[in-house]
Amino acid sequence: MLRLRVRLVPLTLAGALALAACGTRGGDARDSDAAAAAAANGFRGVITAPPREKPDFTLTDVNGAPFNFRQATAGKVTLLFFGYTHCPDVCPLHVANVAAVLRKLPFEEREAVRFVFVTTDPARDTPERLKEWLGSFDPTFIGLHGSVEEVNRILYGLRMPPIQQADVPAGTAEYEVGHAAQVLAFGLDGLSRLEYPFGIRQDDWAHDLPKLARGELPTGAPPSGPGAVDLKPLGERADVPAVAIRVAVALVPQPATTTEGALYLVLRNNLAEDTLYAVSSEAAQRAEMHETMPGDHKTMGHMMPVPEVVVRAGETLQFVPGGRHVMLLGFSSRPVLGESVPIRLHFRRAGELILAANVVPYADLERLLAAAAASLAP
Image (cartoon, rainbow, N blue to C red):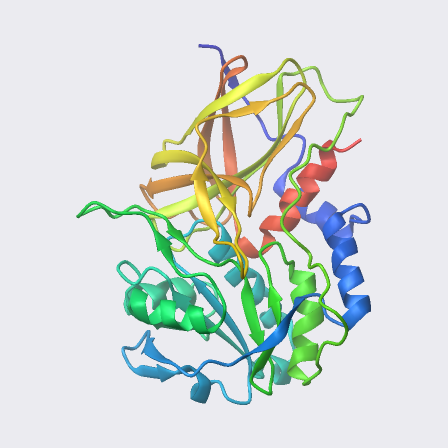
């Protein structure tokens, strides 16, 4: 088997940060959708009609105490999300983006907002686990635990799909849970007129949260929201070196535990069609390629295993949040920010590519990937 050692020369971590901070995104369909939504109703979230009333339910918080959702969040902007801590993709990115934006808000606006995370995986997400996981993003975030039946009743009342979980053999600790992928935003009046689908960006949250904290309400007809991550190829570039596979960036957002994490990539195939058939890492017991299919109020979000990925000649392949990604299961130790994780990509034609994936905060992930993709654009 041919083995190639890849150095991440095209885009270093520092370079990606700089490009992301100063680059333009005028060609991104998500930005035009968000701008259209903001122009129509003043917000970048998606309007839902009729508004959802804040539900009145009681679950258990991370300290083991009863928590009445309606009473405890009265008079606050409340962001409600249903997910699970072993999710390597949708859930941590939603939570990290909100946490990053809240840290930058003035004290008065920050104090007007509450983030509530209801687990859809009560078997593994104990109150202790919820406290540890949420605390890695923001210790003020509220984690709630209840039975699947209790949570499904709440979801039904909110016109959201129920939890979906495949039959799991006894003793199995690794499994996926299907759940809705949007965050519901309840205003100061206790009504949710907006929801934020997966793919919403930090600048969208930064635009909307202060307005919600001031009690502003959206107006106009329901727009089409920002949508999911665009995975279309980015086109040709004449000055690409004549190497088979050019890796622009490889990133591992720091996981909260050693149980699981995710790997994201941006690479380009400069020569003949090839197939990525496996990913491995000495730092993890197992690596699996998956594709996330985000849900909304009508469809259920879920992950699908991907046995292999065909990369056409000249195609740019992106493993990004909300799309294809690699699950890394069973780390030997928790990856540390600023360090790297050894990764091996196994191609049928190009052979084995060895590279180092930078460990980064979840909050920086999307802009780093966008900068990497821009570096491969014409």
